[in-house]
Image 1 (cartoon, rainbow, N blue to C red):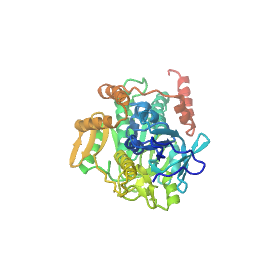
Image 2 (image 1 turned 45 degrees about the vertical axis):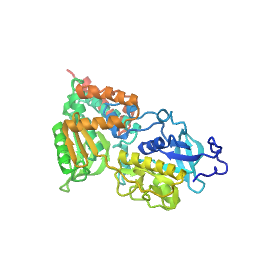
Image 3 (image 1 turned 30 degrees about the vertical axis):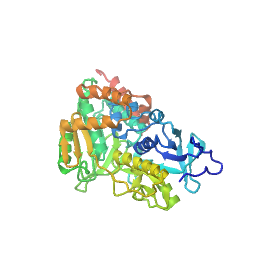
Image 4 (image 1 turned 90 degrees about the horizontal axis):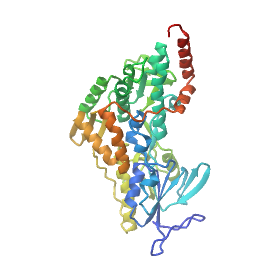
Length: 467
């Protein structure tokens, strides 16, 4: 598999015996890419991690950044810091604009500066983004939550909604500021809805003088007929019960037909149109694979499914391209779910396959996924967990969720910081990450003049006698 550098490329490094090192390029520093790099850290290979951001993202906890529990640093440690002890690994910042499978090069764009990175083996772990099911215009008013930027924007929207509701004396607008609509009742949507309800009823209690945050309305909208559809029926029912006890309004069999600055247009289970007036909308309804899937499909002739995932062979390689591995959310294999554990295991599998080949074992070995369970937290002390035949909910489920997420967080410092933020959120009312930046208000001002309406209304109220 090892080969000389393409013409014009940088000569490969040499090992102690003077032979060219096998060059492995990993696209993406998420779970798949990071676990591949870890599996190769002691190998006689040259590893290059390429990503458009400089951090590894612990995506399952993004909703806690959006709701003020964790900071962005808790869930997004720098990639260079993680791999600093991997002496055979380097990190390059850049957006992949081309994968040249003929010359085995990856072309990058870094702030307008182009570069090319040669490879002998390529591991593509580019992940997935949000899907609006053909209505990308919804994203302007109902952002998703796939990146740190997304989570920080949502945190700003959520916090600014309470601030602007405090200013706004007009009851209809105040009610719209105090209504939060979450679209999609998968784990992300359920976790967001639960935390929004708990935040309004506990963390913000007694923080406002003319506003009762506990009166906030949280609406969870799901087109299907179930919450947490991938979970067993008993845990689905438990999740609905916990959400409703928190005050979340669960609306199943409800399809979103329109989104604008002031709310959602929906069609209910009876087929009748309805309107949810909400100035804060969050999209958690679907995912689509990175555009690199389509790019690889065009280059290699591999099939790409409707979600943009590329169909791979059982060993996670592409047909007629054994040097290219596709792992995690970007691969389509055996209907595996797009969860972190699949990315971790498939990334490690790709790395072990490369190592075996370099040691002379070229027999392909299929990827075997080991399902270690699925879990979702509803709110403080409430979670649902399924591990094989075991079904756990409530406080015990929350403890299991806590231990598992701590175990998979990267680095002792991040674990310690997460515990420091979780403790006041769980045992008291504190949420330490509630700073509101001016940028959040700029976003609000750009949304059809909503902020100007509230500001003018508050001025009129202030001018009235007795106010």
